[in-house]
Image 1 (cartoon, rainbow, N blue to C red):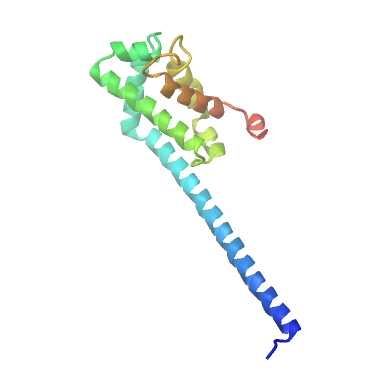
Image 2 (spheres, helix red, strand yellow):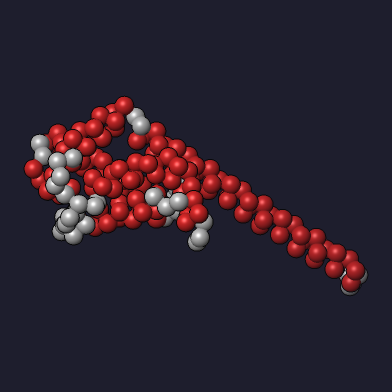
Amino acid sequence: MALDPQLTSQLALAFAGALMGALFGGFARWTGAHNDRRLRLTLDLYNEFHSPLFNHVRIAAHDALSGGASMPAAYASASIEQREAIASVVHFWEKVAQLLRVGALDEKLLRRFFGQYARWWSELLCEKQGALADPEWGATLTDINYLFGRLKRTKREGSRR
């Protein structure tokens, strides 16, 4: 028994339509969930940065780094408490840099939340002579410097991609 060609055609089109709907619906759902994760992670970093504990850590790190020496030299001559503070700040920025590189953060919101701090911390961590070339800290500070460069972009520069 042969199937009617018109019925076969309609069944094939219905199957193709259902398959396309499922694929596009799944993609839309995945994209929405991905954007929600990026937003949530960006907000979590903002909350971590402004937590009372990390605020004290940032103040201690600033005090240790504001003497004029490069970050590696300041770290080497700092007290244990100051070293912990410097390391905590450096590793926070390193974490943000790596998450941005893999696309896990909302860059526009990140720029809005952290752009002003990038200008300030860049000077303390990366811009003093020899910091990026240091054998122990150079790779980490280079990643952070990349992040700071992205965060310091203006809105117009960020949209040229």
